[in-house]
Image (tube, rainbow over all chains, first blue to last red; front, side):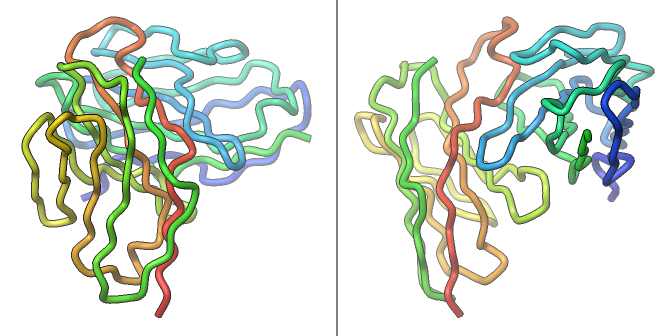
Length: 114
Length: 114
């Protein structure tokens, strides 16, 4: 029962470097999400994919791009990392059947940008 | 979006019941009340949700006030593993960009004393 798997778990980057965070779910869920969580704060939505082949901006999309590679995988890319993007990144997925279906989260990627 | 208010922190003794309150005085008639929790160094985890009636599942119970302006998450017997930040979140029934995200506040940090 893997659920939502995120890789890597930890990463340190230098300012200006690029990086792709990977997310895969094995629950056959239609919708997938990327959030970031800054210290002492709640999660904020970066991008989401309501279904395979579609992606949309969330609350804080600047500096990020996403790819919904297939139904299982949803990646988040930082093209030119900045210190303000130091955060914990969470991927989540949700099955179809209405907005009240719960979201299932991975354990996060802890990203530090120097 | 309707807003929720939760205490910053609460303490409970192990094996005793815990009542976590949430105020949502501006809730609309179609908003569902969701609870998630986040254990240390993990992603959020769905706990329970409801609309008007009290709800029970294997993890917890949700008691919703008759006027729906407040709710209480009840853990019947706290264990050390229940130490987490608990988030009360309102979810509307309809689609649209803003409704896809879960809006996390700061939640209530629950400490369980052995």
